[in-house]
View 1: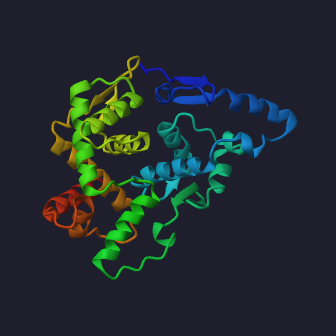
View 2 (view 1 turned 90 degrees about the vertical axis):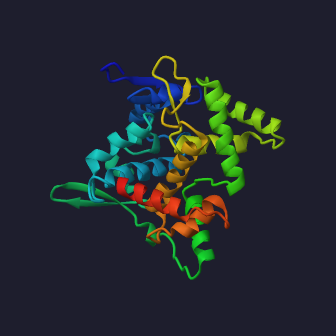
Amino acid sequence: MHGKYVVGIGARNSSNIYWIKSCNEFKYYHTLVTRAEDAEDGAASADQRPDFDGAMDLLERAVGRLARSHDGRVPLIAVRPMMIRLDPSFDENDYGHDNMKAFVEACRDVVRLDDTPDGAIVTLVSDAEAFTVDVDSPEEMENLYRNTLRRIQYRLLPPEERLHALDVLHEILKENAPVEDQAAVKELLMDRFEKDGRPIGDEEAQHVWDMGFKANAYYFQDYPFRNIVINENVTSPDALRRRADSSVIRRLLGKCPVQPLDAKILAAVLYGPDADKEAYVAELIGESAAKI
């Protein structure tokens, strides 16, 4: 922020996520106090710590990003800076570990740690080893794509609902940007869906928000405003659809154990069984693969 390295401090239950993200590094009061108390009273109890599964997911994402530029073998020393870049509030001490190596060793479900003469190396556990894949038909391949997305918690709405939701999202962002915050975007979504005679609740509005966020359809303005504005490259509903489609494809390229992706089957996943989108999806697969 203006050439400064910003470290924020706040309470876990009241710190605004946008304030956390605007810091280079963020510490919770509880972590700092507990660390001081631990020196006298021993380790903090497990029920005082945040969700460990979320931390493992953050570790997996960080190593996945770094793996692209390290041929899959990531130096341990590079992992923590990437995790903090993705989530400034990350602190291995929150999970009962005094150092990063101990934290990574506790995450054997998602990574492997090897000591080498050049230092510790972190690699992702192969997705292909996580479950057995037996694909004998287009229907099974389509189910594999859907199950892979579900496994990485990427919610894919049915084609008609998904396309309508993306069109509505583009329309409200164009009409109302800058929007104050995520809650305001979700409220606008629910209002517009209700006017269209297709009312949705908060959870469904969150899924629509997630689609746009994962597609990089909008971003937060620079501090101190932090309002939400539409990405200048999202010039039309079709442009938003293309970004959303590419977002799905990138995740399948990185997580699906059966490669290469089948454009015809993936077109059916995104646009329905009768959609004539095979050439378009094949183009997106080529573009996305070239960026990995």
